[in-house]
Image (cartoon, rainbow, N blue to C red; front, side, top):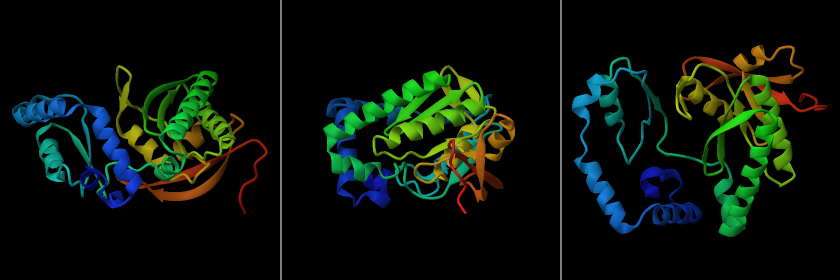
Length: 249
């Protein structure tokens, strides 16, 4: 599985163990057999043309488990669908978390994640944020205003620093497609890319956020223009500064 979904890290023993554990805990062998048998018998090609909602399709061009041709096929048959092809062939990459988990061991790592989510829940409550999703060591949240999101990110980075943990936080604002508690759309994609541009311990925001929070008492350091993978044009990014923090020379 690691060679298909994370080929560039399949040589890492910790990654292989993590993926193997994920497979074992996801379902029993019997359930897996039935699940994949059902997938093989499922064919929705004939109904793709009837989809009439905004559709964003993301796919890595080098995906070994599911060739990018499948995504192109779907995009061609859904009216108005937007296809974004991302470079690379890994399905996911958690910054430094694999080595940290390997060093700590499963029990200590799980305890650290539990503390992280408990601290995050408390900071979200204070700043009126809503936790929408978690994935491994990641967190996706929505706020009723970008200034609250920035302040929550700074507070969370500060709190986790006391646990000897550095976070990467990205903040972006824009229109999203909402279905229940699920948010999707290009704004979500941009937010993820903004977070990916942050260095450990940083809260990085898009120029959209920086402009909207003018007068809110927040300070920023200009990081210049960045090309965000899969996103058209360059984006100007800014690092949010904590109280009393000076810009880097």
